[in-house]
Image (cartoon, rainbow, N blue to C red):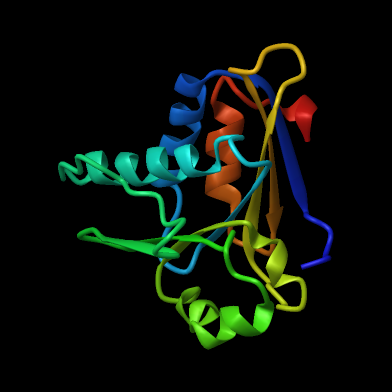
Length: 174
């Protein structure tokens, strides 16, 4: 996981509505086997971003999901869609990488879209293709967020292009 990203995008002073727009771009440009690693402090918006992405997938397929639960206590929440499966995993309570492997979590990465919160525990797992999304509170206003998106491995051109085509990222931020 210590490889250098081939593209890194930054966006600053985003509101919740902006995070929803970015999550929609991810929903439209991800597919089974895509791994999204969400990091940030407690309360930064990792779970909210995952919820927004899952709801955007549901809306895209005209499926009504009333509630997207946090996987903090269950560890994994999975959602079946017509064209994909998404698992939202929260590793906050997982104490070791060994426990992660005992739960079989890395085995699911290749068969679905995996949204993984608190990925720092994967320090010894060699991941070749993933997106790292860091959500950070801004210093000036607590309701705003800064987002850093780093792409590792090949096959992210459509997602990068869509993010650059949004009003939130531009080529100057690469």
